Length: 189
Image (cartoon, rainbow, N blue to C red; front, side, top):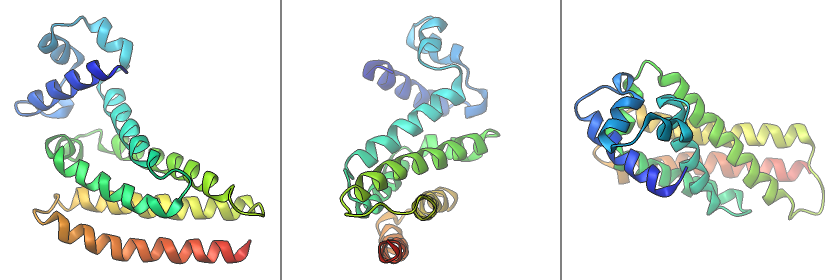
């Protein structure tokens, strides 16, 4: 998706969400507002859920790009994700109220798992031994599940008006859980 198209559709989506529920927004609504053809929209996405999931995947990937090959940076990526969700509250609230909510949350989980696996694989390449695939999969599942739980919990809590306080609580709790499991994993190999 081109950056220009993405920015314009994002702005239009924000505008439309002020007057319609996410489930009632169509590609026609977006293209009419932008003065584009439907073909232009469908070139980039199959439908609205596909467009929203594409945005979720792109955002998660952007967050984890900064992690490089350091799995310990995933928690700070999740922190940035929480801030992004809060900055885009109208979209996140619309997603949480949507009948297609499970599609969007599954997309979020799958994106986090995929990106966590990439970061973990790069991290483990630094080690002198190869870990057991089952152990690696279990650690990936734990880390991605923990980060997903952090973000989903934040979304479901209605995105508190005290974000910094909650982020610090999440970082302490989830950071400790992730660190302990990474240490256990590294001791096994």
